[in-house]
Image 1 (cartoon, helix red, strand yellow):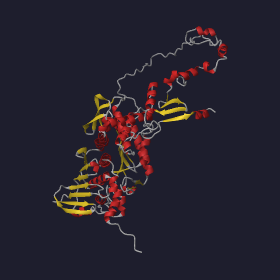
Image 2 (image 1 turned 180 degrees about the horizontal axis):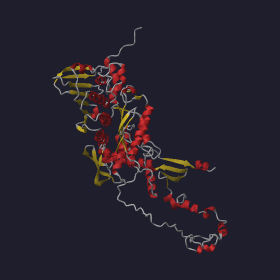
Image 3 (image 1 turned 90 degrees about the vertical axis):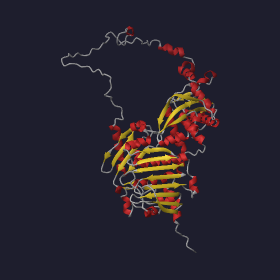
Image 4 (image 1 turned 135 degrees about the vertical axis):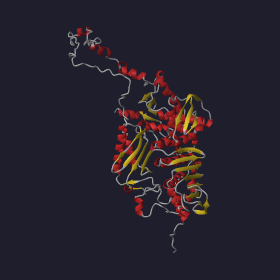
Amino acid sequence: MSDIIQLLPDSVANQIAAGEVVQRPASAIKELMENSVDAGSNQIQVIVKDGGKALIQVIDNGCGMSETDARLSFERHATSKIREAADLFSVRTMGFRGEALASISAIAEVELRTRRHEDEVGVYIRINGSQLEDHKSVACPVGSNFSVKNLFFNVPARRKFLKSSSLELKHIIAEFQRVALANPDIAMSLNHNGADVYNLPVSAIKQRIVGLFGRNMNQQLLDCTTNTTVANISGFIGRPESARKSAGEQFFFVNNRYFKSPYLHRAVVNSYDRLLSADSIPPYFIYLEVDPNTIDVNIHPTKTEIKFEDERTLWQIVHAVVKESLGKFSVAPSIDFETQQVIDIPFFPKSAPVNLPEIDINSAFNPFDDEGDSFTGRGSSPHRQSAKGWQQLYQDNQGKDFETSMPMTQTFRSKGFDDSDEVTASRFFQFKDRYILTSVKSGLMVIDQKYAHERILYEQYLGNLSSGQCVVQKELFPQAIELNAGDYNLLMQSHEDLSTLGIEVSSLGHSSISINSLPANLKISDPIKLIEDILVSLKEEQTKPLDDAHQKLAASMAKAASIGYIRALSTIEMQDLVDKLFACQHPNLSPDGKVILTIISLDELEKRFK
């Protein structure tokens, strides 16, 4: 029997490694940008086309590479940062394992132009699927210029799982933000399909945050700093009012390396105890400086998970410094000492006489004397009624049935518990401003008002998208909103469909939009809040298995525009809501599959009273 174990060819091994290191275009951009940071660059340009599926280009002005280094950089485990295993526990650079370029070149067409400052000419290398196709000297500026084309061209199964260009761009923006926040001393830019998404100059950390997430963030940031023997912590947290229902502005860095930590995330969120609702997440940008020997950054291929030597102590430190920041900057209500209101505080000189307070009493009042009711002075009860004749009250009602003698029965009838036709209009009741109750033949029906309205609007919006018709109302004074780059691109990608639903927005440049019109059939008091809710829903719908883009948009719009809880409804509004709900094709479930109504049977109610 012949041997069956064989060594894999380098090209196949690199493709396997690429499955861990390069999961999507954003992964390649992360690795290339980190290499540029390690090269000592002070300017990095990122250019992408079609969400990175057609082209990824990263240009820097770093130290560049020699001809030999440029060729060796594409070999597996070729690195300039590790010489022995012990170096893994003192590494401070970003890329160090030498897998990135080998993995990228195994599943794409890669071109490299690089030159060192001391060299007169540079080096050009072209690799296609791990195969070297060209290697020559060229004229090029100092630094490195990587071009990655047709990602996963030779792995069709992997390319098939890439998402839409807008979703891939969202991931690219997220990776760009992480590298940009960790290196505010480097000028960075991001260009997609010829349009600038970011153009960030060298700045302080706070200005870099504002440049990435908009000027509105400037007023929401609180300084967060402390130094301990375990770790030095710096950065910013957001005020409670800046919290959102969706994640996206939460960043941890250790030694300028981004990492994810649900454990430390809870330390931050718990610090906002009783300041936030349960479903809100505050923004934070927290930088940790620790001894590299106390952490392990080599536990995950993407290096986004880090193991700390004393994580429990670090949790306490993070929790305490966030608590301190919230208290230091007076997040709780406080007295405004600059107010113009004059408070009148009486002043009594030492020579002023001291008098005992006087009490006005009615000495003639006798509570046991019926005639005392005639007094109208202080201490008397002018509205007091005599208790005489209470026996007659019992005799007058004796023999009458329970229904006519108890006013509560009339109350129940006036509220609609009677089945007569005269009170049909008042057979709906609202409980806790959340549920609509009504009687049916089999028992008591309970309807969730928000889910019901979502279903009604969802089917209405689907009809509008199909017909292309919707009644709109122009805004007399269009409102402008400044968004971060990710939200801006997500909204503008859907702006044509949004206009079909009655929401017309236009770009003002620099990630800002203007709200020009809204649906005429909706009572919207805060258009900006509506756009924010739509963005939250659009982000949620991107992760759900709905293939139809119109279904995604209609569901997002319905969730954002539906009536919320803690909203009192009139009887006519409840009647209209129920009628429209049962006119829907699927009245039982909301667009995201949640139960709209339930019936409590008569048998179940009767069991409660046994």
